[in-house]
Length: 114
Length: 110
Image (cartoon, rainbow over all chains, first blue to last red; front, side):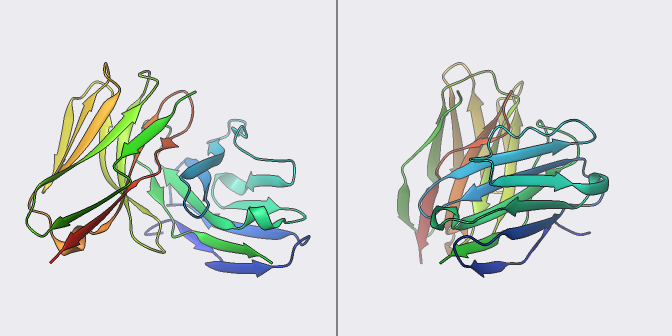
């Protein structure tokens, strides 16, 4: 596609519910990142996928967070038993190959946990 | 652990002025340093990427410099315009995925 696509753009959920956020990277990009941005805070790294390598999960804040990337393309970030502190903008980015390449970001998913 | 700091947090300038945004990082073992722009409610747009072996990159009215030894990068914006109003973030890439600063919120007043 022309750019990184994320859906939904907005998600409102109740505390304790599970949510799934989707990211469709630029076609041909092998690297995919998830970040989150809380109000007034910087971007916080969550997880990084590179080709067929094991993902770098070092940024996931708890075991309620997980992500997968199917077929080296679309990625889904799942948050189980959502808490109010999970409210943030979740941003996905992709790059052609790896960490030394320019990143292209999607518009993000605004998650609000009530 | 890499830490990235941006000063100032906010900046307001009159249209036409040249300005400099500052970024510092603690670990000089980086692959590259990237500058992004973020408009309200939007994702990030990549502006410039400086590889660790480079000293600067230019794109139009933007010029970014990198001094690894001092752990600093600057983004120079020439002849600022109201359309330049946005938050500017720098990010350092090394053995860990990109680490971002909290950004500088720029307002260019017509």
